Length: 151
Length: 103
Image 1: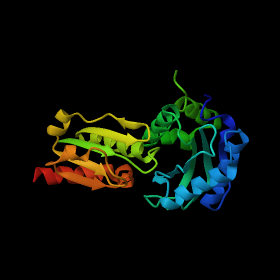
Image 2 (image 1 turned 90 degrees about the vertical axis):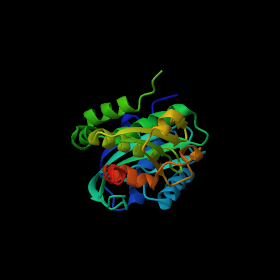
Image 3 (image 1 turned 90 degrees about the horizontal axis):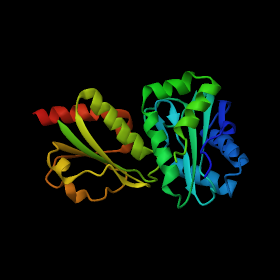
Image 4 (image 1 turned 180 degrees about the vertical axis):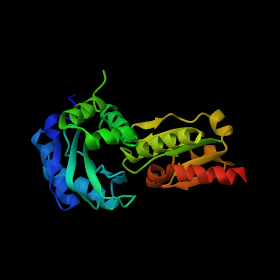
């Protein structure tokens, strides 16, 4: 089992005008790492989930996610938007940072545990501050550390 | 004040844990004792013991999907809030609860 995130899944200058565009761009990145079995089906699972309720969790962060058998191997892509955008977030704040999660159907616990750890981290101010202000190197190592498989 | 809470959400991947962490952070800030059980896709974690439930002043349950083993909380004051509200307004929720209980 490989790591959930890699350098190529981190993009700090996303230009987009809609959340669908952001999801598309980050999905493409995940697809390029060979972790998806079916790109279109994965994309649809994320959009469907998004339509259910917004994944804008507040604090300027959104975590769109798809759990689908179109995913071969779990992944997390992280993107920072050049311009904040409306994500219908629960606090109505514009979203500036997006974590796109890809999880296979029937996934074992290992990756889900790591994603739960990431979710918990996002609540903390200092973690979000580093994501907001850190350099690409700092952000990459923070996310690699957070999403590391421990065994 | 001692609170027990159970968080859950439809996909059980993110909001369950965001809500749990947010409640724990707010509780710490307000000096409230809290025990939060998560019912995510990993399964049940930090399961509340019957003793902890017995001595709790109130129960917070997220209302996005059904909570398992809800009968445990019979006879306790129960507050139902969305996982989203827990994430963003946990401090307000706990403060209000504190006010109500001190009445």
